[in-house]
Length: 211
Ligand SMILES: Cc1cc2nc3c(=O)[nH]c(=O)nc-3n(C[C@H](O)[C@H](O)[C@H](O)COP(=O)(O)O)c2cc1C
Image (tube, rainbow, N blue to C red; front, side, top):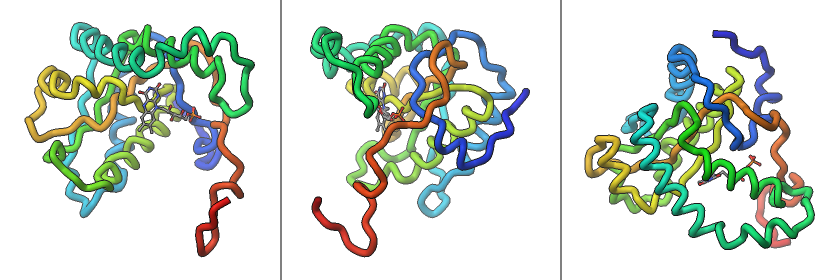
């Protein structure tokens, strides 16, 4: 189970969304190590009202990939032709990024392992900060995956079919899936630094100022 020796800050600066994922299997020991790092993440009151569903069943993946594709087409399908005419952009929102999203939608079920982070008792919650009790841990999952050379991306475009997904995964009625994170070794691309707005555009000391 070889893991990379990688300084923490370097990992934080080199874990972008990875959407070209190889079907090569990932060992159970690696998956367990990744999840063991994830569940060390923060959650309100340390109540850990969560479940982490590791999905490998090809038939169930196929069903949910269909839901995802429907969500992708509904949100982005209409942009496909337009994006092909656009120049590449420096901010990571250009045609290459679109093609990566399109590729993921077409090949989602090929990623060998999917993880659904689930919040129990959350389906009817009106708490706007609900996600804070799991998304930190999800980021830990993605960083731990990075340590094993495994790529990932947070996705939510399946969620128009939340009820069917809940049933397929055998979740209780009051549970809410918070994401679908496909995991796979990289079939393309590299561990580049995520592109973001300059620090000084988004950071404010003491008081927010409209810019
Ligand atoms: C709440 C949330 C939902 C997301 N849903 C999707 C999704 O359904 N499909 C997808 O390809 N990426 C999805 N992403 C990934 C974002 O597109 C990605 O984090 C963002 O573009 C930054 O990518 P980068 O870190 O590679 O620069 C989602 C991210 C978040 C935080």
